Image (tube, rainbow, N blue to C red; front, top):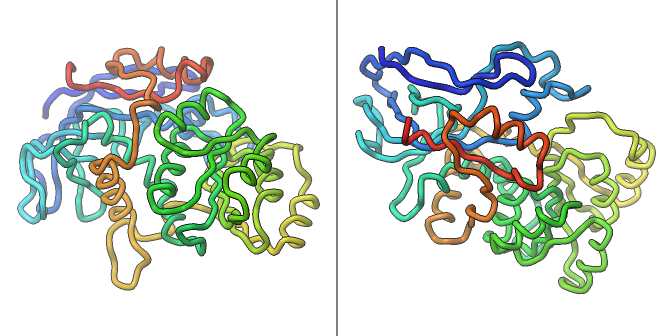
Length: 340
């Protein structure tokens, strides 16, 4: 055993950094042991877990204590005999939490080697790219079609860049000016508020139809704008979790829009495809993460404008508080474990 540290949610709205014992026994054939360098907060998921005040969604009554996080980059410190393509000392991404050490089974979990030229604190954002990349694989929309991405938080800003890099005509949509500006700073060509969306679309894209709406916001309000913008027969894919109920749009209003425009509304659940490559499967989560890493290596995805805070895990409580209460200043935060 070796001593490590990890972030813990002790109870609702209670964040701490705790010591723990990490089992550093030799890895099994398909396992690696990893020492974390950086881990990124997934704001939507982790703040829902911490605040636990949603009236719908899949974290009602979440038990505490809980260990958050699912995006980490670190160095391989031991490698099983059957692990392919990785060696001790390699820098890798793995969907692991905010902890100093991890044991990862590569036979079950996607692990991606970080190429030279991609900074570790950037590579960790591969996890957020993958959330929307299942939709990229399963959509009927094709390159050259118009895509609207609603919500320009971390997931949405990365989704907009991924679709743009894949040849789609993309418009990012968000109520908040500061989010739109960050997405534009990443290289997104077009961003709009919901109010000006139709006019901007026509001015910038002309008669290019919106064949796909990717909603990462989980907000009912976004559905009204989405159904207005979407072309006849288009897809609306729900990537964001609707954490809270809303009366902003009635079910009958939504159903009428779906029926009259022949819209296809579906879940964008990223895990509908296999985790690892499989015969006859339409891609895998691992392949999505690998492709996102290559896009970063080629300079087609930008991360730095999104990251507002790079801090040691000892500042976890303050960072989560900021993400909850000061969303204009705290946009995306990454823990730096290199000094722990």
